[in-house]
Length: 272
Image 1 (tube, helix red, strand yellow):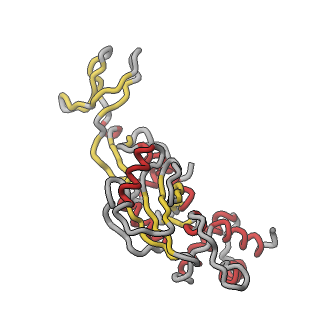
Image 2: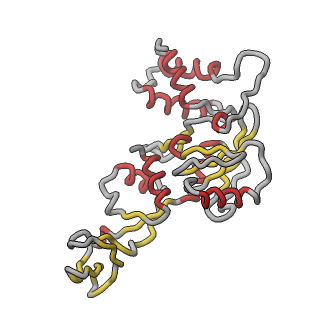
Image 3: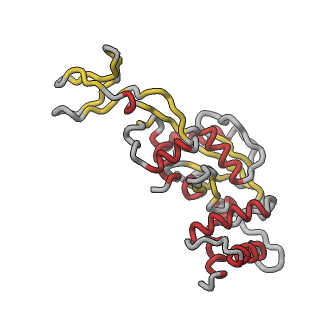
């Protein structure tokens, strides 16, 4: 499971997660290291599976020790190191998504409840207003999103990013976080994988010539990396490097999608 998919899983749980449960997971460690999770003290309860009837039990502090009471086994102590609890840092996630997408009209607090405005993205054809809601799996989720967006200025193209679910809603497109972006495990930055305009079904702008693509910019960039010996072997890894170089060199140009970058890399390497 990718680090971004692990973050989706944690967000979808809707509550605190245990450091002990995820202790050996590389994705969890990366999320902690890069600040996508924040400490919330200790857990309120644990699951006891040491007795014949497994059960949940509240954590108590007794005799200068943390532990819990089991009807069969009595008071059982817990290692404090196992009790660390964490929550996703949603404001930080929103801020990094806005940076990765190059958004304007950002909002640093939620619109209403758990619905956030990430900001406005300019595509080749029109602007897309992008929002975030943790899950879109139930009618309650849909109502919460619709209520929040009713407080916003109307936009023709709107995209809701979520960690779980894709409940269809009129006038809105949805995408899972890990389908839209990926976390760079070295830097913690988010890299965009998909074009928001394409995700909303927006018609491509016809300029009267050949289709608007990024080939004129990508081709020389990729070829120069090959000539300079900077290109890495793996297509996925090279695509990430090319995307970063593209953003640095062309900050005002729409970011090409991951499949587009990979296609041009394969062409430059003599593939199809």
